[in-house]
Length: 327
Image 1 (spheres, helix red, strand yellow):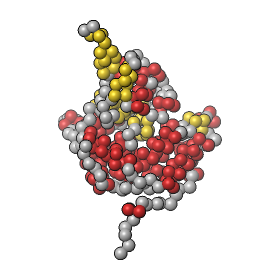
Image 2 (tube, one colour):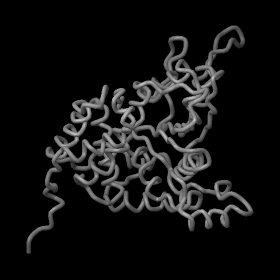
Image 3 (cartoon, rainbow, N blue to C red):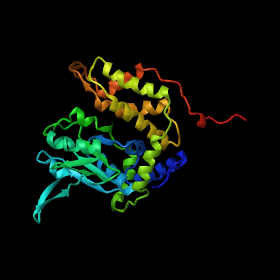
Image 4 (cartoon, rainbow, N blue to C red):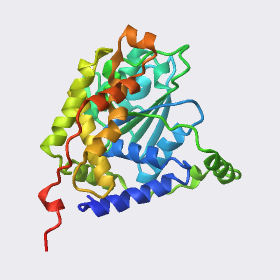
């Protein structure tokens, strides 16, 4: 396995990947870094945005840059669970398992909320356990395995709302957003003759991603930071407009993504700002708001903003090895 032992190694690795993705996705460095942080945290990513903003390109570019297999499944109301996970077929006098598209490195679940809850639930075991069980037999998925799902936040006809258990499996929810004017002009010029995704080459390997995940988990998290994370999650459960707040999985996700961001920044310790910057992306989609909040037009992101404002931020605490020795 490739070694990425030092924070500087991880930082250089991330910059190489981000520069490669930027050939396809212009002006979206922040989104790319957050998506990479989700992959480093070992989680899955929900992309919620309008059509044509680059959600599919982000998934394809990340997969290509990391040398991972890529499969795209268009989720529709008639899609069956076996169309995603695979099915056993009778051949030569016995049943054999034919793997579905989920057996890949990066699975793009396009418009996931258009499939029925039964088909959506087919992803739960794969996202949570890294495996698929069919006819009582468990099949391990290749590692690393990363689901990137998309949904349109404004078109609700013919869609099924993702249940809380499904939403909780996504480490973060991101929005790619429309490009700035100058970025869109540059995009038009870059894509005039051919799409860069067709020639995008790998600048990393699956082994490097696994090594980066292991290195990110070793990033120092002080007790005060852990208490801050737990307090933020607990505050979502105590908020008067929230019916269902974040659980322990939300706290674990916040810590993991904060560690990943610290690693990608070349640090071996987590800062409170790392937690604050990822909290809206980690917590908001996990909240179930009450009727009063909807009548007031209060969004889940606004609730997280109120929670961040109400919980005291701890002082920065560095690990001993990160403090320069006195002369």
